[in-house]
Image 1 (tube, rainbow, N blue to C red):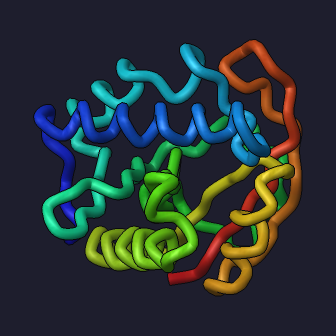
Image 2 (image 1 turned 180 degrees about the vertical axis):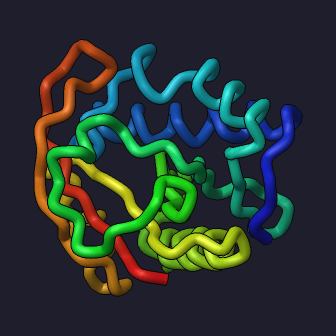
Amino acid sequence: MFRLATHKDLPSIIKIYDAILEQETQTISYTNWQKGLYPTKEYAQDAIADKTMFVLESQETIIGCVILNHIQPKEYDAITWKYSANKEDVIVIHTLCILPSFSKKGYATKLIQHCENYAKQQCAAVIRLDTYEGNIPACHLYPKLGYTYAGTTKFHFQNVIWENLNCYEKLL
């Protein structure tokens, strides 16, 4: 089930963030995220309060989360988007996460499909997102799901790290 997150979901969301960050310290860092910097409990709390955090449940266990809103980072201005749209007609996917123990089982695809359905319900025309250029699984997944690569631009991540993020979009 895909639904709007509530404050009681916060421990499960933090569990997902921590599990991803822990796994990446022991294997490969696909996200380039850093513990204590991003994503944080405060980041999730703010998204829940703003009613922009959503969760994916399987048998009453929260296995994924995502933030959906109209906020396009300023770095998006450097991208030549294929589909022009007013800000209110664009839904942006932020911090899409799947609990590592549920990865490679199709849940990321399901979560993205739910994001697209939500965007359509909001009458959005386009859905956009970005991902770290080193996030090989995500960079392969999005085109398979019909997302068009729009370009790569340098982001000043949390005003701490400079990194290149690949940007994608899909016409709804």
